[in-house]
Length: 74
Image 1 (cartoon, rainbow, N blue to C red):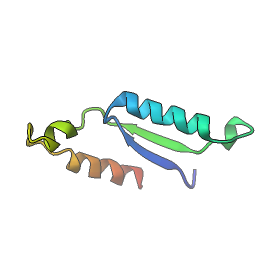
Image 2: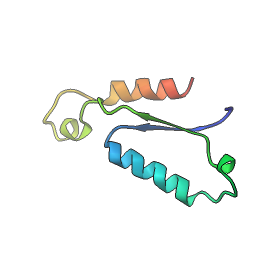
Image 3: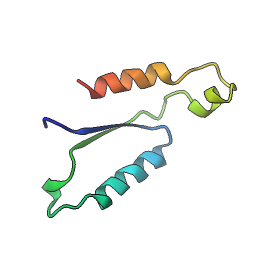
Image 4: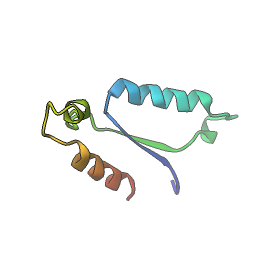
């Protein structure tokens, strides 16, 4: 797989699932092999970003998100 779409998910696992479903259904293909190659990294244990943004937590999700992006870019 030379090129693929990498998605960092798990920031709402249902949202990741919904995005995957949308991509599958909105991609015009003639057969299964025509779909976009994808990797969805469902990292559900990332610290809650909403709590961090609202100042309810001092645990930033950014370090974990950066690690995930690095792993997808290997």
